[in-house]
Image (cartoon, rainbow, N blue to C red):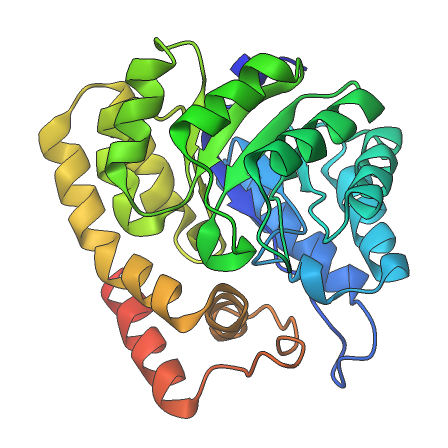
Length: 295
């Protein structure tokens, strides 16, 4: 699958747990995926921050990746986050995802020690050499501890053949402008920061990777459609209507806010896995109020 076919609203999935959190609830995962696809999202992205991929055992990770890819069943593209602390583990996950039928993988260079640019490039090259599907380079220093400059990102895109797209989540709109200008419009990039959605589309983003689709898919999709139709007035109205919820999701933490929101809309997916706490009672009340205003 070419990266050019990945566009629009890319929905992050949660990883539901059973009541005590001891195992993955595959039934709830299937229902959450169906909800997203039935809503009209353009792609599904399991095992990212929202999917608590960092808190799963290898066996759980494999279980969620295999089930998600099989359940999506090519109805839309599946982009599996394969990030891990070591290159060897990330390569293993990338190979597993490809073997199960993933359309693309997403790679965040997580780090304990601060990585040099040469080490980051070698990390992506090792993963790229091990698989044949496209790679979405993911830049999110808030969760990875690694902030890749636009210059480094473009060197990776140039140096690793199947790194064909970039997800930018620094919250700095200038990064997207630089990707567009310095990449001469040839490097597809995707917004990963909810409050920047409108500005990102204006800067040329091909899509928006968001957990908000679990709660307000139609508003997300309508915003994208307004952008495609060059209806700036409508796009602004749609964006500012959903912005309070987008801000809340970002500040409250993706697994906690999305799982609480799903529970409020009738889909029980358990609590986040420790050390992440579930949303507080006050937070749940605030979230419910925000959802009520959007209905």
